[in-house]
Length: 124
Image 1 (spheres, rainbow, N blue to C red):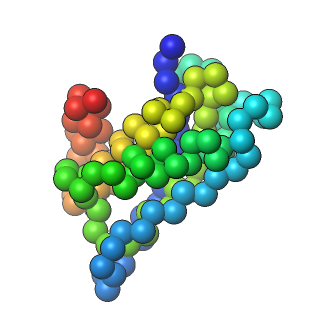
Image 2 (tube, rainbow, N blue to C red; image 1 turned 90 degrees about the horizontal axis):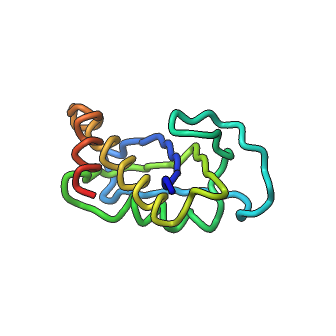
C-alpha cells in the first residue's frame, strides 16, 4: 500500500528571532467519511485537512532535523494538507513534514528545492 500525505506551508522570516516556531493546525479526526476532492498525481483524490491523528507526526517531521534542513529563525505555518482515509498514517505525515522542511530550507538558502527533495527521499 502506498503511504499518502500532503502538506504545504508558508515561512515568515524573523530576523530578530532566536528560534524557529512551527504551527500545525489540525481539523477533525479520521473516519468522518469526508469527500475526497483534492487532486493528487499519485492516485485517487485526497480529503482536504489535517486530522488530529496526524498533526503530531507532521510536527515531528517538520521540527526533527537540524542538519541539512535547518531553518532560520521565523515561523513555519502549515496552511494546507490532504489525507487519504485508507492510505495515510503517522509515518506518512512525519515523512511529509521532513520533506517539506527540506524543501523550504532549500528555497530559503537559494538551493534547488527539487534536488533537496530527491536527496531527502533517497535518505529514507
